[in-house]
Length: 481
Image (cartoon, rainbow, N blue to C red; front, side):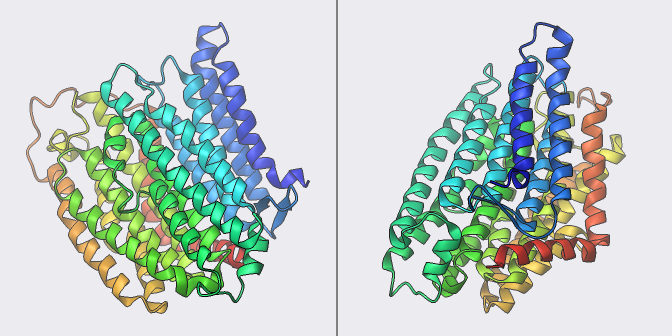
């Protein structure tokens, strides 16, 4: 059984149940504050346990769950995203009277992501995907008094159900071909095989790419992303944009790079084409957006494309680059959405780009954080976003996918059109005198997320060698037999 290896997952699941229970106690203040405190304590304990387990791979529940450096690193990424979401949700309208539900559902979704990252079995992967998705369906529609929030939840439910069904079909064909749901056994069966020997494996891989493509917001399976990101509460959007992408990419790496390394020539082209299309479509569509949340949604689509470049490489360096960029992307996205949360509390249409006219002059610190986020997402040196893209493109070149690296570079050039537009609006335009309550006090929790994330954008670049050592160890654990 080795229950110790599953301790982080058990802690998060227990904290989710405890948060729901505390949220229904009859004492008003306890019900308002208690769930968030329970969630923070659970996240901290799970993060500490994940760090304590860092080392050689441990196997739990007869090989169904791994506690290796890869899964533990992904655990830390999604736990950080969950902690930031809890902090951003403090005093948010959607969470004021529903702290138990918000904290509980966020932690249940996090537990699902941890299941995906550490899965040693196809069934566990699917259960993790469903657990993280169902919780997010409810969170997206949490603001029941807003039509767009309800619409967001409904769209995500319908499209997510389709994606889950396609993924299940793919996993089923993989099981039917190999006779096992255990990833290790599947890998041994497919070792040295080719699609000519196992044609059903090709169909299985195609369906899995489609199913996970829905979760990662990859083109052409991204159609739900802008509407859902715009309509959902911003704190939920933040969590989806960071943690869900980490879980989807972890599944890509676990199934393809970790389980089918001998079939890289067979699945590499398909993933590479999806990655290239995602980069171009995401960046071009973002140029046309005036709503900042939709702009960041299409930006998230493009970022998924960059991450898939590392998956397509099918190598140790590709997996290492994906993990580093996931950490950098977490910091960049949290920084941007933290500023959106602040602005939405100040003016009615705080998610529109026009709401940030001269905002950097009025609030220099927040403006600087948003600018750092935009420049890093665009890939400006020497920020962490640049280092991540450099590693991803380098892994593509090493894998003889030079054309894909060129597509990624072209996409980065296109992205300057909208990332720099946000920075220009912040600093090079006169503040709007009628811009609303521009001096509203920033809540300490939201300000902390913004400052820590902004600092991390720079810190991840300064400490790139140390972070890369950690990512390399995680990638080696993923590719280890």
